Length: 127
Length: 127
Image (cartoon, rainbow over all chains, first blue to last red; front, side):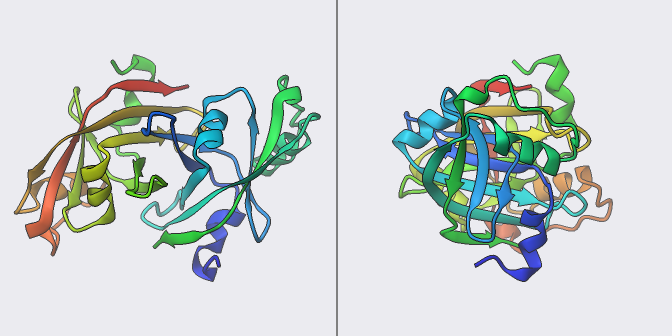
């Protein structure tokens, strides 16, 4: 579902901009590490933060990633939260930290609250 | 309302990630040029696109900008559409094109449909 011309934007360790909807119907955007497994987008998160509360109420997610070298080239993936899998050792956080360039990435202090957010890929846009 | 430590993120010509809410309650994120006049965030847009339709129904907007050199440093500004001022000559588009590095920026072909979106600054976050 991801066009070949935009695949590199998800495969390279670019920062993504994740949109969610707050309980009052307003919008929130945060920078996020992510990984693309060929079928879903995966994020590390905790169960104590606002984004997690947003997603419990409205599972809609949109991830936008632009090419840092040519930012008019971008992909927007819209989908929804499919599952939040516990990651109590923070192993997926460590995986992402390494993906984003920190070879010595340690598990985070808040690892007991960590989850892996699995997002569906429902619509793809961009240019 | 913008902390001094994050002000450069709005004053420099960084690409922003603008979140809006679609009529079905799902979220949309797009890369955007913007300008900060010290009080509002300003965007060029057209009245024919989805984002404009989204904002007619739900005026909530969130602009997130990260530092391209140190992307964990970012600002998120949440607010709402205050006004969409007609820009039938595309003058604000030209202003932004020059701000983003194209000294020869011409007016866009769709200038008759162009508007300047003026966004309030209601909440500021980031790190």
